[in-house]
Image 1: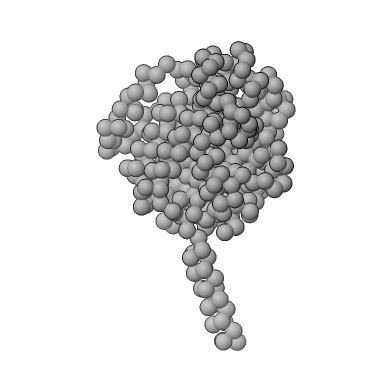
Image 2: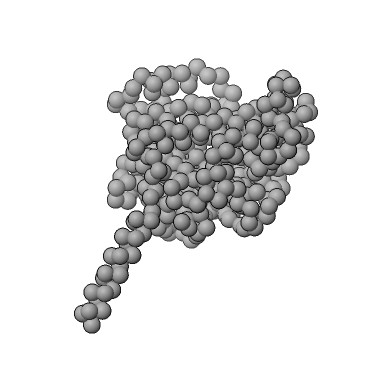
Length: 363
Ligand SMILES: [Zn+2]
């Protein structure tokens, strides 16, 4: 009896040690694009929009030189070089429906607040039915992580869209949320942070007063990362969706191209800082898709195919499988539990939430 107990305890200890040894990632960066289509990610620029005048306003020779190529492989690499040269080599990219690999949103609305609620809470709440929905009553995975041992005061979110104050429930969540045209406030701001706070207020409000251009959000996030070294960072872009709604396909492509470049710059920094290097998982997601033909500008439950999404992941525990070419189906409500699992935690909620995506966690 006693001997059995000793053996059992040794087994538990050995199991835990081997889990810890096999698991290298203890930091997590989540980046979201807003309403960026899987078609543009996997096929590159769409000739129907790029060559015509209806959805473009920049010089045609320049935009064609910048984004066009002989086949989808050249086109997608020109559009998003970091995705296709780095993540496609060292990480995994899901959602190429041309290859039968499907990712979909689970909620029934197919727009932003319901999408981000689903991403961060794992619960596709039918009550979250408007972008003006109140402060989110659903607990999110970031506030869960922020309460775990070793992760207290180690989480931060920088977002271009001001609605994240409600989506993440800034009043309740317990970690800093800098969203929309808000200054980042701290007692010890450095010169870069002061300039970024000031500069954003001199930008024309091209997307309205609730949506800040991504370049500002990115540099605020990067500066915070360098200075404060959070273990978990959320960075949420908006430019692709904003230009999509404006019907400016060339600017929409520019936005995706520069979002890709900012993630490349971020990853370069991550891999140059011993605090993050080879210990950080990067997860890139999108809140919803967009329609086809002229409906590419829009998305909602009445716009077919705008529930079609994609995600990408890379890090020390992620197998370098590249573009996933096997048939499969994943859902957005599975991300929250997967985020926690990257760090070795099990996120549960009072609601029934999506199961973690087992295949990305195999290493
Ligand atoms: Zn939108």
